[in-house]
Image (cartoon, rainbow, N blue to C red):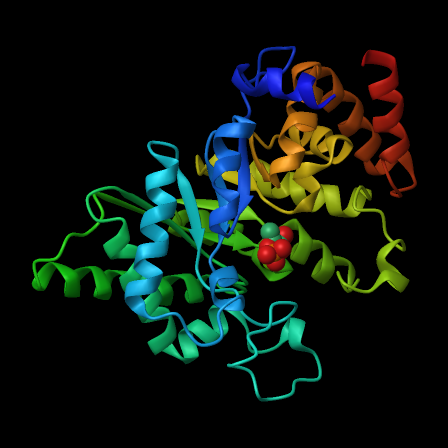
Length: 327
Ligand code: PEP
Ligand code: MG
């Protein structure tokens, strides 16, 4: 199997019916970088910047952050890297930052909320990112946005920092693309405004599923209660894919779903053309998609998702049958 996946490395990620899919990596540490070449992924779809902060014993200084981001961009060469600004809080704890106790940290003071309330932290990170990407493209997205205004605020910070660097005649990126993670359900009802504002988006299905179904992503007692392939959730994902296409905004999905072949099948059928996953998933997913007639599956899946079916439930059985029949 491993050898078979390695052989796929240089083969195009195109479905059997000719649809090109962008397969990218999730990363966060330097050890992840060699996987880019090994897996044949076409870039980094999610770079979790908080990991550098989580393994440190104090806040990494601006220069340290900058060197780190530079190394990542150098390793990627001309492959795109989508950085995510600090996603601290919830399941991602910094021992040297959070002294306050929250009853419900997943829904507490975290990610972009913390970034906007303590702008010093985010500003330092933005400066490091903008400098590291001097003369090249910077792609940056913000986590846990629940209102489009938070994106506008964050974007204004990026602009201020860029102007600051320019004033001091320091290098700035040649292109800046800004996006958000879609991982809070309130964004599902602001997609028109959102896609008007952003350059791109990426669905964080781990958190989106958690908040959509009220199922704690880390609690094994409730983990099996709702299948991630349940129709209600797939309808939400389809809405995102449809609206993004209509607005002509590139949208990817970078949660764990993307790395599981059966789930990835469903994502492609719903219209996602870019998915980002852990390195070990690239081979299996690529192998799946090269054999998939995505147009055919889409027809079956959408028929099953039609409310006239009478029972929302899970489409896992349908996908398994389809895989058996055609795979
Ligand atoms: C997600 O929420 O799906 C995601 C990709 O981000 P993280 O797992 O880091 O919260
Ligand atoms: Mg998340």
